[in-house]
Length: 328
Image (tube, rainbow, N blue to C red):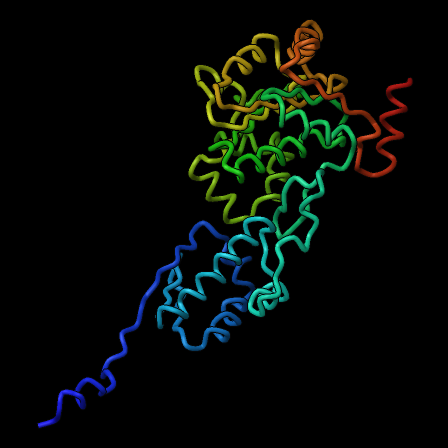
């Protein structure tokens, strides 16, 4: 019969493995894991002692606890980078694996960088008046941004909304605009509500696609985190903990813009954009935006930013076209 010492010194027959499940449903797998999951393949090769299995919207990690802890540290770094840049290049991943990664390799301190959009695209205020929009929303909860086509007022407004959502300042984004433009009434257009609205809301969709990965944007819209609706749908609602943008505000009537502005909840942020030179209302009807600008021009806790041809960032001819019409 073996001694107690022999029994105590005998190596264990079973080496118990730990298991960890990491939820990745909030991430865009295509961009994070790369084409054909190449980033995941690199990670698996680095952690060869672990079994890493991708199952739907989760990663299952099996192995010894200390190595799993190392994996979790790496994954935390990956998520932090991805939440800022919406992408993960193989070069960045390699730096992370070598522990050479530094988060501030990109100019985070630059004041005019709003966020890093789809595929790492840098979204920034590119003109003095666009930057004024950014500054004003840090101080006040209601902003009127008025200027010509191409001046970036709508794009900057959407960027501010996405930034607020990303930083959890708000719980949802609501984008709206008057449903009647250029003499067309939605009631006489074919298709369901979304089909009717889409042509009018294309600039808002384009901006969102620049800033949010495709799958994530679809998820946000399906769950109601991002809502796009005609102005009439705002009636009777209290919009709280939301970032709300009214685009093409020059085409609202006085009663419409009053209705919209009085939907504002305590923790909401509102931006109204418009171009008072492009009013499509009947000639006998005054623009609600023009009335609001006059009413609130001296209100300290409401900001009005006037953009002009110097803010136009489209083709260089657009500035000349705007000037020509303004000076005719």
